[in-house]
Length: 397
Image 1 (tube, rainbow, N blue to C red):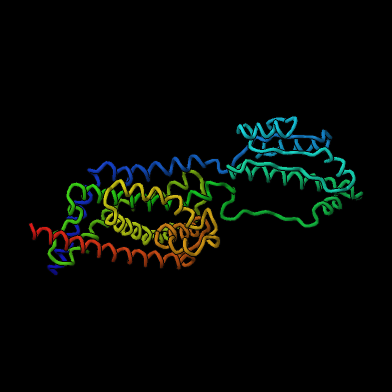
Image 2 (cartoon, rainbow, N blue to C red):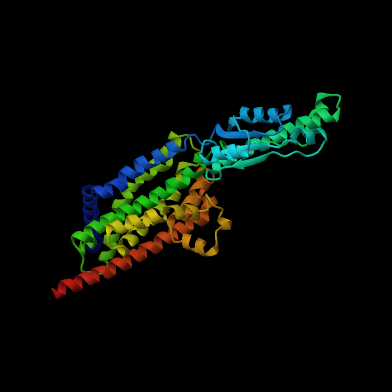
């Protein structure tokens, strides 16, 4: 009982000491408090419109016929595309595109109406600025939908049907209804923000822990270890006390990120809070112990910032959200398994966006617990070696 009581006192002392260091260090406060509070708001506000509207497009009409003008009017009437101007030729249109005045070009050839009147297939060429995928989607899909509608109308007129119902069946013999599941608006914000929120938790935790350890190391090479116990079990008290400090802070930050931010901006959030809490518990512990391991391996506090900021975008791709998981090479999939965000993002999206339960993400849930245990053991091993080295140095002095 005495040893248990002593261990609890040691952990509480380390927790209090680490909490004071966090409050005193402005850099750590920025990454622990300011960035998780403000960065998701800024990111969500930028993508709050979800989809792009009124993308400027230039038309090159070499046909000058009623059908070509009808095509242009229907494109301009769509919510996604705005006909900026009519260009005399392709050179003028390409000049507007190169100067970013327009994002795309619709080229209607001179034989457009003639081929249709001959009951031949006509073509409309679509040129898009591929530097912005959302603009490309709006331009291409608008041209495609307008061409399908015009094709249905022409087919109806040529069919010589007697009733309106016959015309409808001839134009659309198979009625298809498109239903967007998990992302009803089809917006980019609802698609990418949930993954970014989970990645923010990991990155800010690692950055804050690394800065705290780096500051203590620069002031005193062995200060960040607090070797208060003469037994090897002291490493468990140190790791546990520090982890408790970070866990208490990020318990509030995580609740804000996953419960408040999505609802503020109307992003899809249909998961049950109790399942989210149970899933995010191992993820949070995993990130904490992962951050402690990284903080011990990086010598200077600036290096932690360079490392984690550099890998932020690759980690987002490796989660399988912005790029299909099946298309990621096996080597990089193995690398992604080293980071808590990989399984955290996948499980969070399935619960929060798809309405899944904890049993639906049981594989990710188990991996997060295994990762948390592995990084906890690794952190204890690293701290034990550092404590032993500190004691050798003290004996030599």
